Length: 453
Image (cartoon, rainbow, N blue to C red; front, side, top):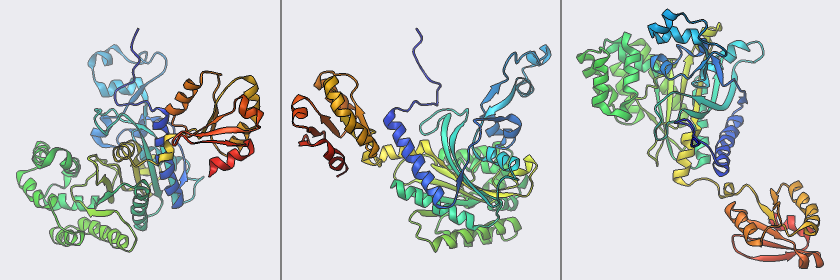
Protein backbone atom coordinates (compact mmCIF):
# COMPACT_ATOMS: atom_id res chain seq x y z
CA UNK A 1 0.00 0.00 0.00
CA UNK A 2 1.31 3.46 -0.93
CA UNK A 3 2.25 5.65 2.01
CA UNK A 4 -0.05 8.73 2.27
CA UNK A 5 1.72 11.93 1.18
CA UNK A 6 1.13 15.44 -0.15
CA UNK A 7 2.94 17.32 -2.95
CA UNK A 8 6.25 19.00 -2.04
CA UNK A 9 5.84 22.61 -1.06
CA UNK A 10 2.36 22.09 0.43
CA UNK A 11 1.31 21.50 4.04
CA UNK A 12 -1.46 20.00 6.15
CA UNK A 13 -2.55 22.10 9.12
CA UNK A 14 -3.68 20.45 12.36
CA UNK A 15 -6.45 22.08 14.45
CA UNK A 16 -4.07 24.19 16.57
CA UNK A 17 -2.16 25.32 13.48
CA UNK A 18 -5.44 26.21 11.75
CA UNK A 19 -6.46 28.26 14.80
CA UNK A 20 -3.16 30.12 14.59
CA UNK A 21 -3.66 30.81 10.88
CA UNK A 22 -7.19 32.08 11.50
CA UNK A 23 -5.73 34.43 14.12
CA UNK A 24 -3.40 35.78 11.41
CA UNK A 25 -6.18 36.14 8.82
CA UNK A 26 -8.57 37.77 11.32
CA UNK A 27 -5.95 40.24 12.62
CA UNK A 28 -5.00 41.35 9.09
CA UNK A 29 -8.65 41.46 8.01
CA UNK A 30 -9.55 43.65 11.01
CA UNK A 31 -6.82 46.17 10.11
CA UNK A 32 -7.87 46.24 6.45
CA UNK A 33 -11.47 46.95 7.47
CA UNK A 34 -10.25 49.66 9.88
CA UNK A 35 -8.87 51.53 6.84
CA UNK A 36 -12.06 51.14 4.78
CA UNK A 37 -11.18 48.15 2.58
CA UNK A 38 -13.92 45.75 1.37
CA UNK A 39 -13.45 42.01 0.85
CA UNK A 40 -13.77 40.19 -2.49
CA UNK A 41 -12.87 36.70 -3.78
CA UNK A 42 -11.78 35.44 -7.21
CA UNK A 43 -11.52 31.86 -8.60
CA UNK A 44 -8.50 29.65 -7.82
CA UNK A 45 -7.94 29.23 -11.55
CA UNK A 46 -7.81 31.89 -14.25
CA UNK A 47 -7.50 31.72 -18.02
CA UNK A 48 -3.82 31.50 -18.97
CA UNK A 49 -4.40 34.51 -21.23
CA UNK A 50 -5.09 36.48 -18.02
CA UNK A 51 -1.92 35.32 -16.27
CA UNK A 52 0.79 34.97 -18.93
CA UNK A 53 3.03 37.95 -19.62
CA UNK A 54 2.21 39.75 -16.35
CA UNK A 55 5.06 38.43 -14.17
CA UNK A 56 8.05 38.47 -16.53
CA UNK A 57 9.76 35.42 -18.01
CA UNK A 58 10.79 34.05 -14.60
CA UNK A 59 7.27 34.39 -13.21
CA UNK A 60 5.66 32.78 -16.28
CA UNK A 61 7.83 29.69 -15.75
CA UNK A 62 6.41 29.31 -12.23
CA UNK A 63 2.75 29.17 -13.31
CA UNK A 64 0.96 25.91 -12.55
CA UNK A 65 -0.95 25.05 -15.72
CA UNK A 66 -4.11 22.92 -15.73
CA UNK A 67 -4.62 20.33 -18.47
CA UNK A 68 -7.79 20.75 -20.50
CA UNK A 69 -10.51 18.29 -19.49
CA UNK A 70 -11.38 15.28 -21.64
CA UNK A 71 -9.08 14.06 -24.42
CA UNK A 72 -6.73 17.04 -24.31
CA UNK A 73 -4.36 15.47 -26.87
CA UNK A 74 -7.03 15.18 -29.59
CA UNK A 75 -6.30 18.73 -30.82
CA UNK A 76 -2.54 18.14 -30.94
CA UNK A 77 -0.94 17.02 -34.21
CA UNK A 78 1.81 14.38 -34.19
CA UNK A 79 4.13 17.06 -35.51
CA UNK A 80 3.47 19.34 -32.52
CA UNK A 81 3.74 16.40 -30.13
CA UNK A 82 7.12 15.27 -31.43
CA UNK A 83 8.53 18.78 -31.84
CA UNK A 84 8.78 19.13 -28.03
CA UNK A 85 8.01 22.84 -28.39
CA UNK A 86 6.72 23.38 -24.87
CA UNK A 87 5.16 26.80 -25.49
CA UNK A 88 3.23 25.69 -28.57
CA UNK A 89 2.18 22.41 -26.92
CA UNK A 90 0.98 24.17 -23.75
CA UNK A 91 -1.26 26.41 -25.85
CA UNK A 92 -2.96 23.32 -27.28
CA UNK A 93 -3.45 21.27 -24.11
CA UNK A 94 -3.92 23.92 -21.38
CA UNK A 95 -6.14 27.00 -21.32
CA UNK A 96 -6.24 27.62 -17.56
CA UNK A 97 -3.76 27.99 -14.70
CA UNK A 98 -3.73 28.36 -10.92
CA UNK A 99 -3.37 31.99 -9.90
CA UNK A 100 0.22 33.09 -9.19
CA UNK A 101 -0.82 36.04 -7.06
CA UNK A 102 -3.98 38.02 -6.22
CA UNK A 103 -3.06 41.28 -8.00
CA UNK A 104 -3.41 40.23 -11.64
CA UNK A 105 -6.76 38.45 -11.01
CA UNK A 106 -7.81 41.63 -9.19
CA UNK A 107 -6.95 43.73 -12.26
CA UNK A 108 -9.10 41.38 -14.34
CA UNK A 109 -11.88 41.67 -11.73
CA UNK A 110 -11.79 45.50 -11.84
CA UNK A 111 -11.98 45.56 -15.64
CA UNK A 112 -14.77 42.99 -15.71
CA UNK A 113 -16.87 44.63 -12.97
CA UNK A 114 -16.05 48.29 -13.75
CA UNK A 115 -19.76 49.23 -13.84
CA UNK A 116 -20.52 47.58 -10.48
CA UNK A 117 -17.83 49.22 -8.33
CA UNK A 118 -17.05 52.82 -7.28
CA UNK A 119 -13.62 54.40 -7.77
CA UNK A 120 -11.34 54.72 -5.93
CA UNK A 121 -12.02 51.07 -5.12
CA UNK A 122 -10.41 49.73 -1.93
CA UNK A 123 -10.47 45.95 -1.78
CA UNK A 124 -8.86 43.27 0.31
CA UNK A 125 -8.57 39.58 -0.47
CA UNK A 126 -7.34 36.61 1.61
CA UNK A 127 -6.94 33.48 -0.55
CA UNK A 128 -4.35 30.87 -1.56
CA UNK A 129 -1.99 31.23 -4.54
CA UNK A 130 0.28 28.69 -6.24
CA UNK A 131 3.82 28.89 -7.64
CA UNK A 132 5.88 26.07 -9.17
CA UNK A 133 8.89 27.21 -7.15
CA UNK A 134 11.62 25.11 -5.55
CA UNK A 135 10.39 24.46 -1.98
CA UNK A 136 12.68 25.66 0.81
CA UNK A 137 12.42 27.21 4.28
CA UNK A 138 9.78 29.93 4.21
CA UNK A 139 8.97 29.26 0.53
CA UNK A 140 6.03 27.07 -0.45
CA UNK A 141 4.24 26.08 -3.65
CA UNK A 142 0.84 26.71 -2.11
CA UNK A 143 0.48 29.63 0.24
CA UNK A 144 -2.01 32.28 1.31
CA UNK A 145 -1.73 35.95 0.45
CA UNK A 146 -3.54 38.71 2.26
CA UNK A 147 -3.78 41.65 -0.13
CA UNK A 148 -5.11 45.19 0.11
CA UNK A 149 -5.23 47.42 -2.99
CA UNK A 150 -6.57 50.83 -3.96
CA UNK A 151 -7.33 51.35 -7.67
CA UNK A 152 -8.53 54.44 -9.47
CA UNK A 153 -6.44 56.93 -7.48
CA UNK A 154 -3.00 58.44 -8.24
CA UNK A 155 -2.68 60.00 -4.79
CA UNK A 156 0.50 59.14 -2.88
CA UNK A 157 -1.54 59.37 0.33
CA UNK A 158 -2.53 55.79 -0.52
CA UNK A 159 1.14 54.75 -0.17
CA UNK A 160 1.35 56.60 3.16
CA UNK A 161 -1.75 54.71 4.31
CA UNK A 162 -0.21 51.37 3.29
CA UNK A 163 2.82 52.14 5.50
CA UNK A 164 0.36 52.71 8.39
CA UNK A 165 -1.45 49.44 7.62
CA UNK A 166 1.83 47.49 7.62
CA UNK A 167 2.87 49.11 10.89
CA UNK A 168 -0.49 48.45 12.58
CA UNK A 169 -0.66 44.79 11.49
CA UNK A 170 2.79 44.01 12.88
CA UNK A 171 2.14 46.06 16.03
CA UNK A 172 -0.85 43.81 16.73
CA UNK A 173 1.26 40.70 16.12
CA UNK A 174 4.08 42.02 18.32
CA UNK A 175 6.62 41.58 15.48
CA UNK A 176 9.35 44.21 15.03
CA UNK A 177 9.79 44.93 11.32
CA UNK A 178 11.75 47.09 8.90
CA UNK A 179 9.67 48.53 6.06
CA UNK A 180 11.97 48.88 3.06
CA UNK A 181 10.85 51.30 0.37
CA UNK A 182 12.11 52.24 -3.11
CA UNK A 183 10.66 53.51 -6.40
CA UNK A 184 10.80 51.85 -9.82
CA UNK A 185 11.20 55.31 -11.43
CA UNK A 186 14.46 55.70 -9.48
CA UNK A 187 15.62 52.31 -10.79
CA UNK A 188 14.68 53.43 -14.32
CA UNK A 189 16.69 56.59 -13.73
CA UNK A 190 19.69 54.58 -12.56
CA UNK A 191 19.51 52.38 -15.68
CA UNK A 192 19.32 55.57 -17.74
CA UNK A 193 22.39 57.27 -16.22
CA UNK A 194 24.54 54.13 -16.52
CA UNK A 195 23.55 53.85 -20.18
CA UNK A 196 21.51 50.62 -19.95
CA UNK A 197 17.86 51.79 -20.18
CA UNK A 198 16.85 48.84 -22.36
CA UNK A 199 18.13 46.42 -19.69
CA UNK A 200 16.01 47.75 -16.80
CA UNK A 201 14.21 44.42 -16.24
CA UNK A 202 17.48 42.45 -16.18
CA UNK A 203 19.00 44.99 -13.76
CA UNK A 204 16.02 44.96 -11.36
CA UNK A 205 15.73 41.15 -11.37
CA UNK A 206 19.46 40.86 -10.58
CA UNK A 207 19.81 43.48 -7.83
CA UNK A 208 16.61 42.24 -6.17
CA UNK A 209 18.63 39.10 -5.33
CA UNK A 210 21.39 40.98 -3.47
CA UNK A 211 20.27 39.79 -0.01
CA UNK A 212 20.01 36.19 -1.20
CA UNK A 213 23.12 35.68 -3.38
CA UNK A 214 25.48 38.55 -2.51
CA UNK A 215 27.09 41.34 -4.57
CA UNK A 216 29.57 39.16 -6.47
CA UNK A 217 26.86 36.83 -7.83
CA UNK A 218 24.64 39.83 -8.68
CA UNK A 219 27.49 41.32 -10.71
CA UNK A 220 28.02 37.98 -12.47
CA UNK A 221 24.33 37.85 -13.38
CA UNK A 222 24.43 41.44 -14.67
CA UNK A 223 27.42 40.60 -16.87
CA UNK A 224 25.71 37.41 -18.07
CA UNK A 225 22.68 39.50 -19.13
CA UNK A 226 24.94 41.61 -21.37
CA UNK A 227 25.31 44.69 -19.16
CA UNK A 228 28.68 46.35 -19.83
CA UNK A 229 31.51 46.29 -17.31
CA UNK A 230 31.46 50.11 -17.16
CA UNK A 231 27.73 50.10 -16.34
CA UNK A 232 28.21 47.44 -13.63
CA UNK A 233 30.99 49.55 -12.08
CA UNK A 234 28.79 52.67 -12.14
CA UNK A 235 26.06 50.65 -10.42
CA UNK A 236 28.18 49.60 -7.42
CA UNK A 237 28.15 52.82 -5.32
CA UNK A 238 24.44 53.26 -6.08
CA UNK A 239 23.24 49.85 -4.88
CA UNK A 240 25.59 49.98 -1.85
CA UNK A 241 24.45 53.49 -0.82
CA UNK A 242 24.32 53.93 2.97
CA UNK A 243 23.20 56.57 5.47
CA UNK A 244 19.92 58.04 6.72
CA UNK A 245 16.97 58.33 4.31
CA UNK A 246 17.51 62.11 3.85
CA UNK A 247 21.21 61.56 3.06
CA UNK A 248 20.39 58.88 0.50
CA UNK A 249 17.83 61.14 -1.17
CA UNK A 250 20.32 64.04 -1.34
CA UNK A 251 22.94 61.74 -2.94
CA UNK A 252 20.36 60.38 -5.41
CA UNK A 253 19.33 63.92 -6.39
CA UNK A 254 22.93 64.51 -7.46
CA UNK A 255 23.49 61.13 -9.15
CA UNK A 256 20.20 61.30 -11.10
CA UNK A 257 20.35 65.05 -11.85
CA UNK A 258 20.12 64.39 -15.60
CA UNK A 259 17.28 61.83 -15.38
CA UNK A 260 13.77 63.30 -15.45
CA UNK A 261 12.11 59.98 -14.51
CA UNK A 262 14.66 59.45 -11.73
CA UNK A 263 13.88 62.88 -10.24
CA UNK A 264 10.15 62.15 -10.37
CA UNK A 265 10.77 58.90 -8.45
CA UNK A 266 12.76 60.81 -5.81
CA UNK A 267 9.92 63.37 -5.46
CA UNK A 268 7.38 60.57 -4.89
CA UNK A 269 9.58 58.81 -2.36
CA UNK A 270 10.33 62.02 -0.48
CA UNK A 271 6.58 62.80 -0.21
CA UNK A 272 5.85 59.34 1.28
CA UNK A 273 8.75 59.52 3.76
CA UNK A 274 7.94 63.10 4.85
CA UNK A 275 4.24 62.33 5.47
CA UNK A 276 5.12 59.08 7.29
CA UNK A 277 7.33 61.08 9.69
CA UNK A 278 4.20 62.98 10.82
CA UNK A 279 2.55 59.74 11.95
CA UNK A 280 3.09 57.53 15.04
CA UNK A 281 4.68 54.74 12.97
CA UNK A 282 6.80 52.54 15.27
CA UNK A 283 8.41 50.40 12.54
CA UNK A 284 11.69 51.39 10.89
CA UNK A 285 11.09 52.82 7.39
CA UNK A 286 14.24 52.54 5.26
CA UNK A 287 15.03 53.65 1.70
CA UNK A 288 16.72 50.63 0.10
CA UNK A 289 17.97 51.00 -3.48
CA UNK A 290 18.58 47.24 -3.81
CA UNK A 291 14.84 46.69 -3.42
CA UNK A 292 13.56 46.05 -6.93
CA UNK A 293 10.77 43.47 -6.62
CA UNK A 294 11.16 41.44 -9.78
CA UNK A 295 7.54 41.69 -10.91
CA UNK A 296 7.30 43.76 -14.08
CA UNK A 297 4.03 45.51 -13.32
CA UNK A 298 5.36 47.90 -10.63
CA UNK A 299 5.84 51.46 -11.88
CA UNK A 300 6.22 53.64 -8.76
CA UNK A 301 6.76 53.08 -5.04
CA UNK A 302 7.70 49.54 -4.01
CA UNK A 303 7.64 48.08 -0.49
CA UNK A 304 9.13 45.07 1.24
CA UNK A 305 8.90 44.11 4.91
CA UNK A 306 11.51 42.13 6.84
CA UNK A 307 11.15 40.80 10.41
CA UNK A 308 13.90 42.31 12.58
CA UNK A 309 14.26 39.44 15.09
CA UNK A 310 14.06 36.37 12.79
CA UNK A 311 16.08 35.16 9.82
CA UNK A 312 13.37 35.06 7.17
CA UNK A 313 12.78 36.41 3.68
CA UNK A 314 10.28 39.14 2.92
CA UNK A 315 7.05 38.76 4.94
CA UNK A 316 5.14 41.50 3.07
CA UNK A 317 5.59 43.34 -0.20
CA UNK A 318 3.84 45.52 -2.71
CA UNK A 319 3.87 48.74 -4.67
CA UNK A 320 2.33 51.09 -7.23
CA UNK A 321 1.31 49.81 -10.64
CA UNK A 322 -0.03 51.97 -13.48
CA UNK A 323 -2.29 50.61 -16.19
CA UNK A 324 -2.28 46.98 -15.02
CA UNK A 325 -5.94 46.87 -16.08
CA UNK A 326 -5.00 48.12 -19.57
CA UNK A 327 -4.43 44.56 -20.75
CA UNK A 328 -8.05 43.85 -19.87
CA UNK A 329 -9.53 46.75 -21.83
CA UNK A 330 -9.57 49.34 -19.04
CA UNK A 331 -6.64 51.74 -19.63
CA UNK A 332 -5.20 54.44 -17.36
CA UNK A 333 -6.32 53.03 -14.01
CA UNK A 334 -3.55 53.36 -11.44
CA UNK A 335 -3.36 51.17 -8.38
CA UNK A 336 -1.23 50.51 -5.33
CA UNK A 337 -1.29 47.56 -2.96
CA UNK A 338 0.37 45.48 -0.27
CA UNK A 339 0.46 41.72 0.22
CA UNK A 340 1.05 39.98 3.56
CA UNK A 341 2.63 36.52 3.32
CA UNK A 342 0.48 34.64 5.84
CA UNK A 343 2.61 31.47 5.77
CA UNK A 344 5.82 33.35 6.56
CA UNK A 345 4.08 35.35 9.28
CA UNK A 346 2.88 31.99 10.69
CA UNK A 347 6.52 30.79 10.85
CA UNK A 348 7.74 34.06 12.43
CA UNK A 349 5.02 34.00 15.13
CA UNK A 350 5.92 30.36 15.85
CA UNK A 351 9.63 31.12 16.19
CA UNK A 352 9.00 34.11 18.46
CA UNK A 353 6.18 32.34 20.38
CA UNK A 354 3.87 35.34 20.02
CA UNK A 355 0.48 33.64 19.72
CA UNK A 356 -2.15 34.53 22.37
CA UNK A 357 -2.42 31.76 24.95
CA UNK A 358 -6.17 31.35 24.45
CA UNK A 359 -5.50 30.03 20.92
CA UNK A 360 -4.07 26.83 22.41
CA UNK A 361 -7.55 25.54 23.24
CA UNK A 362 -10.57 25.52 20.98
CA UNK A 363 -12.80 24.08 23.74
CA UNK A 364 -13.28 25.88 27.06
CA UNK A 365 -15.30 23.21 28.92
CA UNK A 366 -15.61 19.43 28.68
CA UNK A 367 -18.49 17.65 30.42
CA UNK A 368 -17.56 14.15 31.57
CA UNK A 369 -19.86 11.25 30.64
CA UNK A 370 -20.91 8.77 33.39
CA UNK A 371 -23.93 7.22 31.67
CA UNK A 372 -27.42 7.93 30.37
CA UNK A 373 -28.98 9.39 33.57
CA UNK A 374 -26.02 11.65 34.16
CA UNK A 375 -26.09 12.86 30.54
CA UNK A 376 -29.79 13.75 30.85
CA UNK A 377 -28.87 15.77 33.96
CA UNK A 378 -26.03 17.55 32.07
CA UNK A 379 -27.67 18.30 28.69
CA UNK A 380 -29.63 21.44 29.80
CA UNK A 381 -26.56 23.25 31.18
CA UNK A 382 -24.38 22.10 28.24
CA UNK A 383 -26.87 23.92 26.02
CA UNK A 384 -26.84 26.97 28.32
CA UNK A 385 -23.03 27.14 28.21
CA UNK A 386 -23.06 27.15 24.41
CA UNK A 387 -25.81 29.79 24.29
CA UNK A 388 -23.58 31.94 26.51
CA UNK A 389 -20.79 31.68 23.93
CA UNK A 390 -18.67 29.19 25.90
CA UNK A 391 -17.32 26.42 23.65
CA UNK A 392 -18.35 23.14 25.29
CA UNK A 393 -17.84 19.45 24.52
CA UNK A 394 -19.83 16.55 25.93
CA UNK A 395 -17.64 13.45 25.99
CA UNK A 396 -19.56 11.01 23.72
CA UNK A 397 -18.96 7.70 25.56
CA UNK A 398 -19.18 6.68 29.21
CA UNK A 399 -15.49 5.74 29.19
CA UNK A 400 -13.16 5.40 32.18
CA UNK A 401 -12.51 8.70 33.92
CA UNK A 402 -8.77 8.42 33.26
CA UNK A 403 -9.38 8.25 29.51
CA UNK A 404 -11.78 11.21 29.56
CA UNK A 405 -9.32 13.34 31.55
CA UNK A 406 -6.47 12.37 29.22
CA UNK A 407 -8.57 13.56 26.27
CA UNK A 408 -9.26 16.92 27.98
CA UNK A 409 -5.58 17.24 28.81
CA UNK A 410 -4.45 16.46 25.24
CA UNK A 411 -6.76 19.18 23.89
CA UNK A 412 -5.67 21.62 26.63
CA UNK A 413 -9.28 22.09 27.73
CA UNK A 414 -9.10 24.36 30.80
CA UNK A 415 -12.26 23.19 32.62
CA UNK A 416 -13.96 19.81 33.14
CA UNK A 417 -17.46 19.42 34.64
CA UNK A 418 -18.09 16.23 36.60
CA UNK A 419 -21.66 15.21 37.44
CA UNK A 420 -21.98 11.73 38.93
CA UNK A 421 -24.47 10.19 41.40
CA UNK A 422 -23.29 12.27 44.38
CA UNK A 423 -23.46 15.56 42.48
CA UNK A 424 -26.91 14.71 41.10
CA UNK A 425 -28.19 13.88 44.59
CA UNK A 426 -27.05 17.34 45.82
CA UNK A 427 -28.29 19.11 42.64
CA UNK A 428 -24.70 20.28 42.00
CA UNK A 429 -21.72 19.67 39.69
CA UNK A 430 -17.97 19.58 40.28
CA UNK A 431 -16.01 22.15 38.24
CA UNK A 432 -12.37 21.15 37.84
CA UNK A 433 -9.72 23.67 36.78
CA UNK A 434 -7.31 21.58 34.67
CA UNK A 435 -4.49 24.10 35.06
CA UNK A 436 -4.47 24.42 38.88
CA UNK A 437 -6.22 21.15 39.79
CA UNK A 438 -8.69 23.10 41.95
CA UNK A 439 -12.22 21.59 42.24
CA UNK A 440 -15.39 23.52 43.13
CA UNK A 441 -18.79 22.10 44.04
CA UNK A 442 -21.38 24.48 42.55
CA UNK A 443 -25.01 24.62 41.40
CA UNK A 444 -25.50 24.17 37.62
CA UNK A 445 -26.91 27.71 37.29
CA UNK A 446 -23.57 29.11 38.62
CA UNK A 447 -21.43 27.42 35.92
CA UNK A 448 -21.62 30.18 33.29
CA UNK A 449 -20.68 32.92 35.78
CA UNK A 450 -17.76 30.89 37.22
CA UNK A 451 -16.34 30.08 33.77
CA UNK A 452 -16.65 33.67 32.56
CA UNK A 453 -14.91 34.95 35.71
